[in-house]
Length: 148
Ligand SMILES: [Zn+2]
Ligand SMILES: [Zn+2]
Image (cartoon, rainbow, N blue to C red; front, side):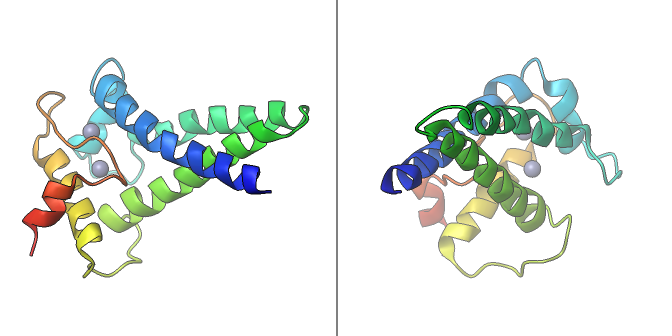
């Protein structure tokens, strides 16, 4: 049980790094064609960028599927970590930051303010190049300190 929790948390945390690297090197690289309409908004509710939710579902589903045949079932918990990160990404990025569904109020907490600021700074640049802050849940401490 403890191992299952540890594997799930490790997989979740690894996803923050994988999402950062994917965003920096693929989405702002060869997959910009799918990410562009998230920076240069088209006004449509659906963005091509949303396809990344489906792309990231593939490793999660694969881990659940393959893991269900293995014993012990550690790979299932890797899949669970990826799934939970996907849900967190949707809640934080799409609902909390971009307010595609108006659910959360303005934050008072300085970590959440820093998280908003980091992503706003990412969106300052509408183009593919010279963007910063590609992560999501990890907020550089200097940004949190800069608020107040
Ligand atoms: Zn971006
Ligand atoms: Zn965004």
